[in-house]
Structures are given as C-alpha cells and as structure tokens.
Figure 1 (spheres, rainbow, N blue to C red):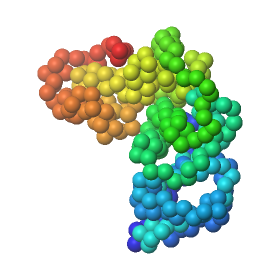
Figure 2 (figure 1 turned 120 degrees about the vertical axis):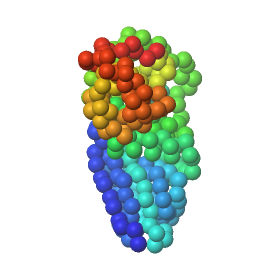
Figure 3 (figure 1 turned 30 degrees about the vertical axis):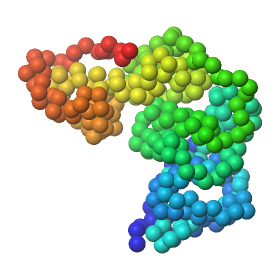
Figure 4 (figure 1 turned 180 degrees about the vertical axis):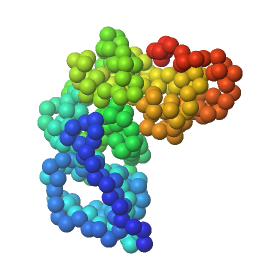
Length: 292
C-alpha cells in the first residue's frame, strides 16, 4: 500500500491563496466547510465526497470546483487511494479575478462541481506546479490565468453586456515592466508588484503585456534569463553557477528553459563555443537586447 503524503502551504506570490498536494489512502475528511473556494485536480485514483446533499465522484483527470462555505467530506473510492493538487483561493481573490474579466459585482458561483475539462486541468496543474517550484512572478501569473480560465469555462454570473473589445495598448507600462524584470532578473517582482508599479490590475497588465510582447511576463523573463545565461556561458562560467546567477532554481531548471530556446542544453552549448569563451575575461555587457 502506498504511503500517505501531504504538504499544505501558502502561496508566495498571491496573498489569500493556500495550496495542498497530497496522496491519501485511508484518510477520510469529516464533514467540514472552507471559507475559501476549493479547486482540486485529481492526478491519480478516485475521490468520492458528499457535497451539497449529493454523493459525487471525481476520478483521474477530473477537476472539482467547490464554492465557499459548502459542507463536504472526502475519501478514497478504492484501497488504491487518490492523489490530487488543490488551490484554496479566498473569495475576494476570485471575485477580483471576475471583476478583471468585466463581470458583474458579486461572488462567482460554480454550478457544476465535478468537470472533465482537459484545458481547465492543465491550467490548474500549471498554476499549482509553479507555486510549488517556480518564482513569485511565474506562480502569480499562472494562478491569475488559471482563475480566469476556470471562471470563463465554469462559473456564473455571466459577464457584462457587450464584448470586452480589443486589448488597450499600454507601451509605457510594458516598458516599465521590462525594465523591472531586467533590473531584478534573479529576484523578480510578483505580478501584484508589477501591477502596482504600472497602476493596472494584474489581469489587465497580463493582457497588455502579452499584447505588446507576445508573452506573459514570467515567460518573457525566462527569455531574458536565457539571453543572460548565454553571455555568462560564453564568458566561461559553469552552468550551475549560471543558473544561480540568472535566477533559475537550479541547473536542471536552467537546462529545461535553455534547451527550449536554444535546442541544446547549456553544457553542450558551452563546449561547442569554448574557443570563443576563452577570449572573454568577464561576461559580455548586460543588459542584452530585449526580446521583441
């Protein structure tokens, strides 16, 4: 029988959001309710739970969407147990995300509790993994995107009359964000900090930045980090040191993003360029040209 494991923690980039990653076999939740929403992705096995007077079943790949203050239980359907990732965003966090989408004031409600929606599952998993392993900017950006996606796909009330229209261009705000990301490449601000610096809401900033650059801020930052990593590798710095210098969590994190951009891992890149690298006494000038 697999061992039970659980980790519960607070989101580093967005106040009012807690997270759980767990595998349960014999554990049973007694009847309880949360002040927050509960957004859960079942990664293995099946959970069954009472919710709102009904007995529901969430199997592998399902997303469970529980509204605040609704009493529920939870346990494994079979002796194999279940594994899942859970976001617990406060009601005002979700309401703010809905307001950024142009929805009517009020607390959004999720009328369908268990959904099989691969896109929502991917959004929820990406936000959760980033909160576990990523920096504050990536984790907060992906969380905002996940909340917006879940709201659009599964919540009510509907948005205000009329279409949201085209994204309003904000080149000055985007330049401000670019400068902040360059200045703090190894310790980037959170999405909330960037929004405060530009006087925009986090969701509006995400839309404007993507509209100008084609990338959300956290992905743009990784492009900048890879460009700086190339310069440091060309200067002869070891890949493990480069990873720390540019703000990646470790060498594996650097390798993953470097290969996505360059097609080869940093060690292979550096070996093929060693003759050029030996010509540098120090790393080339920084900052690099910015991604378009």
